[in-house]
Length: 614
Ligand code: M6R
Image (tube, rainbow, N blue to C red; front, side):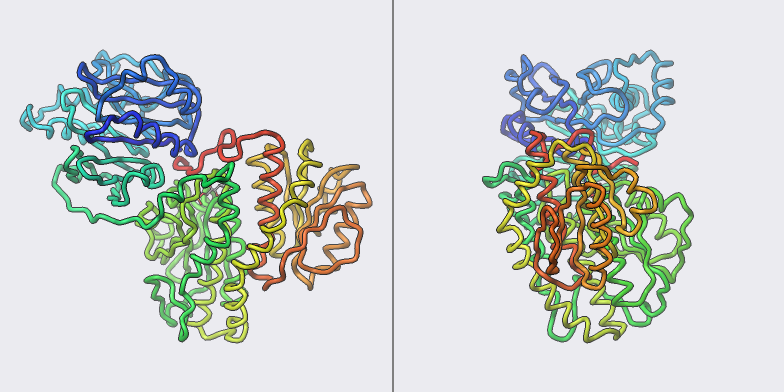
């Protein structure tokens, strides 16, 4: 939530920051701002609304500086307006700060600063940061030479020692026009290394067109940047060495590539992303997943697996539960990360906890992981982003290879996550030496998935036409049994978040225990039926809603002789991995409905791609 980007080099900063902001907009888009170091000090320009509105503000063309920071906001403290937008400056206008996160003790810090005659103009938590830095810059018994940029660094580290909460911060100081300082605590930040120029950003895609060389900061690590150097320090100002990582993502992967929206592009990328996630993990003798190296003794000692995640990643976890229980015979539970933390889960060294996060930056998921670790469980992170926070906390990380996912509504990450969970379940089962026959068949089915997804994507017109018919509806139901219910949940989430249509997902058999009271003439019920064994019962449930006047949209891989309104046929596959196919018509349905309603599918209201606050 909130995106920050910075540039220090020889080029004019503004166009680079503009491009970075546009790429970060998926993290928040209610206001934006930019500060650059000009000949006569720091110039700070901000505006309510999207990034494009910022670049229409009078005076923005005058920014010529080659050092700058910028921010796109997802409001937490203080309504979206120009004054509350970042960058925020201290009273003397010496420091400019962009911040992603929440300063939990900002009220106390405000009082501390007010009692020392500092004034506040915004309602934000962030405004305390530049003023606190200014306070330490002028008041601490700072023994560092007053001419060295270390004085700037010392003031920032002193201020950060006072902050409680989460933050990724970039700071400029007009006294040190050739420097930028960044630090993080529980909020994402990456540093991109260039040639006589350096970049900072909340995430890799925003600056991927400029560099592929990245440093990842750990909590409470500070970086002092010039155009030619990046020095790293701990909070006691001891220098530290950091490893540089080369990112293999293609910079074209952060472009729309001729598609009208990232979401559609990402839906159509699924044959590729699933294929890349399978990679060459199925080796002749055994399945291999990166560096994962678990023993038979350890896996046999596990009596419970927790899968913990949020939103779509949690829905992928539901498919993972089925896979792990079915193939490995280990009881598995799926938890929403924000609930898991506070319910005192029973965890010990006989539990294994798997955390799924596309971004690897979801605050609740990371906090849940820390809890599981503290209670003695081994932890596996499944992430799509190399070097993301979750990957640095977990005992083991395994990656999906979906490529950057830009649209707020997650699509290709979901199918890649289930693919990887299926491979993980196979990996466990092979070590445990169970279900060898099932496993071989499943491996073949997994490898056939990319082609089958392509088949579904070849015929989208039926879904598009149905979307045209129903886009004005107020409520839509999604139903399914077994694994299909988990897909119903995901279909319903996709629809809600991008089309703003209220929807409910239910196990088909549960409808008659209450929700069927809401089914009336003309309502749409989407039913997923991919399990041969549950087909008759599922059809009966659909008949129950048809009788009450519902329109039906069926997604199935089974032949059926019934007169339902719309039946989308998808290829057959193993039921355990069927969500990877059955979700695709649902993603498209949500997409086409949102387009029909003329909505911004990539940036739905109130949402942000990466939820870095609790
Ligand atoms: O980056 P993560 O996978 O941790 O994100 C989790 C959820 O915030 C995310 O899946 C969210 O639900 C999506 N907007 C759903 O499309």
